[in-house]
Length: 463
Image (cartoon, rainbow, N blue to C red; front, top):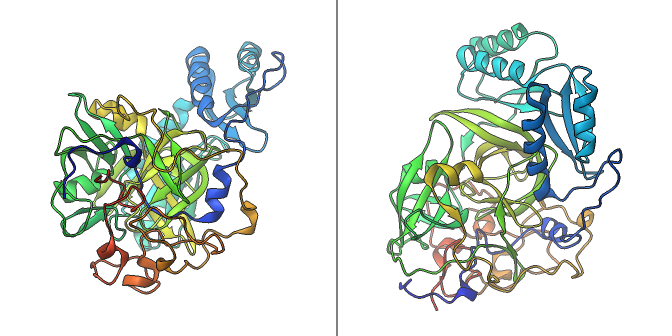
């Protein structure tokens, strides 16, 4: 399979060729909603991609008084936590158009609490992150944390003091989402491509999860195909979960877009920081498109393979094979790469993501390519286009027949279906169980073709 000169119109990334209709509908309206400006005392309404810049500016201005921030999605307002009754700090916050919120715990106090958790409660199956909405650290223990392990975590949280941290049980099991899907293949491992980037030496590359890069050095866009990309850098476990994978052919042309199905793509314009309360969309090769909200920042996750720090916590579902897939905003901000979590897209769960900004800085890459502004396959999603009522469709409902859309043709899924099976893994290869660890040629993984950009491979395609 040749990947030498690829038409730009076919080079949009596609981490899942067919999207869940409910989440896709949310991408269409108000994508270009304006940001209103009032007087200094009137909170502004912010677009998702603007809140991180304002929050960072206020954090610098306020110093130790700043205690985190979050996005009120309903009001479209930025809420900034401030410690103590500092009228000057409140004035600065309001001048920036944000809402001031007085809280108990300083950033330093929460950071100290997180260090105590790391020292005394690093137990596989646990995670914690800062929740600025509650001004506390949210600690979660999965179903494997029992007996003495549970007692250790529980006592550590209690010893932090009142109003510092909360502890909750999760029904699932924390793990990286490395199996399943049909996006990119490395030996017996399948993952999803996150975002196309340009490496520091100017060569084309892409970002995916670090545990994918550690698991295999060579990656293909089909299960039995030749390698088209090689891992250059990989971090997992430790300070993140990200890999930089360089295309083997330096002439490969890529585009900076996420295919959301139905012939539409969302152009990725910039890398943005996550904010608690922010609405985000996740695309993955197993479960397609799903949406939710950011619920925590600077999360620490104790996977069985080791501890990973600095992650984004969300209530977006994901499953095996979605690892490395893109987390983005409605207006084209690259937010994260799927790492792992607990639960699934039937029962629900929580998922953690590697921040894109941190990954780019660590590997020295830049988002997209020199011509990343070009339209992706099928063109950008039209914000004015009609969309189904988001509330009318349950994205976790039963998958449509994989044959309803040809994964090799970029065709739209049957719009009458309640959701789609992006990988074809729902009924083709393993019945209704997406978590298959073997690859069966009866599924869409074996049928996948790189003949068109909508093939769900997440990789560039041949002419």
